[in-house]
Image 1 (tube, rainbow over the protein chains, first blue to last red):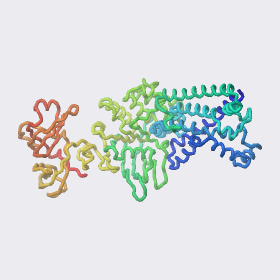
Image 2: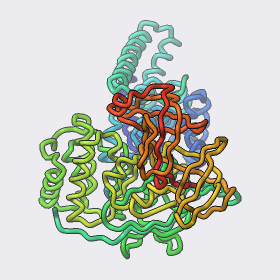
Image 3: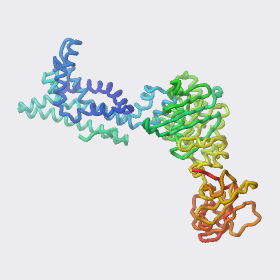
Image 4: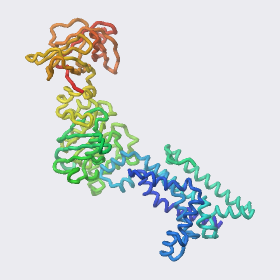
Length: 226
Length: 373
């Protein structure tokens, strides 16, 4: 059960961070007219197509004692980043980024541009326009982003294994725990955890699709096929 | 209304171009002056009307030029001035209205008054809601009110900010004539106290006639006429404007002879032997001209008429008839020149018009307008 709580704690932290950084990033992706925008879009979508081991490998190298991120962390806090809970958070944020950003971009893009023009002409700043017009019309997308970030982080395995290892209470998440049980032929224990994840994931997706259906518009419109 | 506003004329001398430096495509190349009161911006779709409005509002940056309201410069490419839309004091009502769907009517109208103290804000919202007769709808959402009511709310939302210019992009195009007239009356009444320039985009001839004060006609991004609607649109000098302004008959012809003393000339319609008398213009015999005639200006008679002042009476046969709402478009073939005339259902019945029947087409000289491409 310790593993499950660790996973939930990790997923909550990651969702909160993604909410904070995903919002401005998605806003920029939805409204920027910069020609090179597609490059940023590709980078954001990378975790969708890269094997988690590849992402995890590079993160591990970066976070290691000789990696740039690891060195920086060492200098700032006096300890390394790899095989720590914080390191897991950093890795998970990157890994789940598209799951937060894409629903947000889709719903921001769904807001009629004329409403933004009307708001500007009526004297509202970009921030006020976002707060009063764009955000209230994007609630389903925001909910989708939060729920997907949470669920995806909860279920990740490869990146965690690469970056976090398997330290009970620190980096041993529920999916690693299941893997361990299977390796030790403890199928009953593995099944207990697996069922919890299965039921939870199904519930989450039902909520997301339910919200999308009720809104009548797919906030998941730009969702790539996996 | 809170205080009277008298703002200067809107002047815009701008060029908007797209494409590269080697092959610039001019979207708009225009110089207009809009005094206070309603000025119609008239032209076919794609002529650059909305582009001009976007430039004035600050939503689109002209390539070069200057836009000012009185002495206040909104944009000046040579002086490096480009006020953001938020600071222009230009109100803009879009064709789609763009009311905020999640906000009530009252919240929509109060939206532009964020910097106004709470107490004054309420007062101004109340006044404008009353002026546009939508006070009873204040707590409704835009989706819960009718098209005409949405229209009034959009106007109220824009005007409550006491703008110095009002831009209207075909705002009434979807409303029926009666509703349109009543909204225009309210807008006029408001404009009596707030003397600001109102630039009203339309491509509907009916709206021009209903609002008529001043019209600026544009085509292909250029001004092709400005002044009183009758001067600009009733004597169209351009073919496309003639079509847009409801000149259904466009006839190619060759000038045969000039009669300077009478101020007329005769012209033979292309590929026919039909000659008609048209107003004199700068032309010499043999010149090719194009003549525009409104279908509503062509009379039909079932017998050869006499004692008429009209100089052109042509015999022909009815080729076809189409019902268009409350009028009937009758195509008459006069020795292979086909002219369209509009008649009422009553006229159709009393003259017993039918396909193949012989009729006389009656056309006044001054109903024939010479146009160029």
